[in-house]
Amino acid sequence: MKIIICGAGQVGSAVCEALWEKTNIVLIDKDESIVDDLYSHYDIQGIVGSATSMKTLEEAGVETADLFVAVTSSDEANIISSIIAENKGVPYVFSRVRNPEYLEDIHFMKSAIGLTRLINPEMDAVKLIDQILTFPAANSIDEFADGKLQIVSVTVQAGSLIDGKKLDELRSELNLRVIVCAVDRKGKITIPNGSFRVQSGDIVYVTATKENLRHLYNSLGGQRRSANRIFIVGGGQMTYYLLERFSKGLRKKQVKVIEQNYHLCHELALAYPQFEIIHADGTDQRILDEEGMDEYDAVVVLNSNDEENMIVSLYAKAHNMRKVITKIDRPYLLKPFNDLGLDTIITPKKIVADKIIRLVRSLKASQNSSLVNFYQLADGLMEALEFEVLNESEITAANLKTLNFLTGTLVTGIYRQGEHIIPDGNDVIQVGDLVIVVTSQKNITDINQLIVAKVK
Image (cartoon, rainbow, N blue to C red):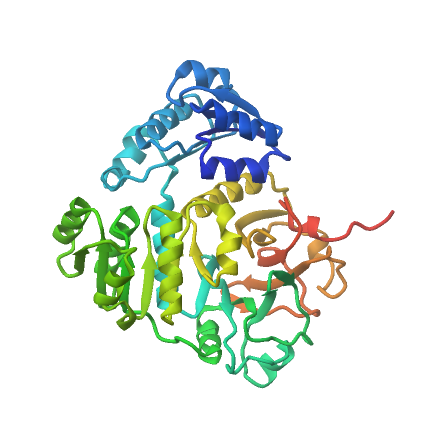
């Protein structure tokens, strides 16, 4: 498979890192030093040039590409290069568009220009933030089976109902119909069995329906109700999208935004008069105190600077804010930030990279199963995969306890004809099932790859 990536920023780099071993990647960027750096790390072809140059795209072999990804810093360059790729017959074209004005014309772009796969990292991230504010006990939420199943990560609070419980006891004593598919204990990742005992401070990854997750949240301690009083630091594009989402939501929200740029403040105040927009420096701790940050249910930090976001979030944590959500643009900072106790971190570029990686793996899948969803868990140490089983194969030939799965693999959910099945060893996967698997294995494109091959 041949992939052309225009733009060597965080998204382009993440896609290169995830796919270079299994695909033929051509990377295009104007910055020679960035191209050279990625070329030296990965077995890819690097071209220094403009994504909108026909000569550059022809040099990259656009006519023979299977996938074209335009993720430069310029919306205009992404749109133009994607139109060229579409006209050259590339089967799958992704174009990143972030300007709200362009997104208002999305239907025209799709019908008249022919762009069918517009991606917007900030809008995807805002959707996730809104979901987490609805269930503040969750650190992250990943959806499967068209949103009917979720894998959430939650931090176990000291003294909560599940603190000190064995996993077997969660169902027998607390009647929690969930599967704990992974546990992060001080950076060590475990796929636990029923005798595993949960401790306070553990970050547990849980698979369940939304309704069953509500019962889990009630057992966790901490904040259980939706966060309806929101304190936002930073007034950029993500804040615009978030306020737009709040304004159309069913629940009325009390929102205050702190932004240092007067022009941004003025625009937000005109667009959303129902929310309070304050012109001030959101990194100034005195401002945060004066504006009553600690009176809100949640703090959402959306400045453009990662270090500023870290400082503001740590200050909010020190004030025992019930929920703190932090935007981080540079994925390599995720691990040290987690170590500092910032448990709900949103990385827009990682969300989009995962979407592209999911498509590539689905295209490489076999006739036996199709990869429907893909998410990285625990800083990329684990992957959550959703497969649709298309045909009879090794995975359908025996019950789960008979199948010999690769190390670090757990089937966490089966969705069959509208019913969620919490799998045990006696269940048999059937054709047509949606199957959710958590694994430490990498580059999986077919569910049967997770079964140890029989020696002939």
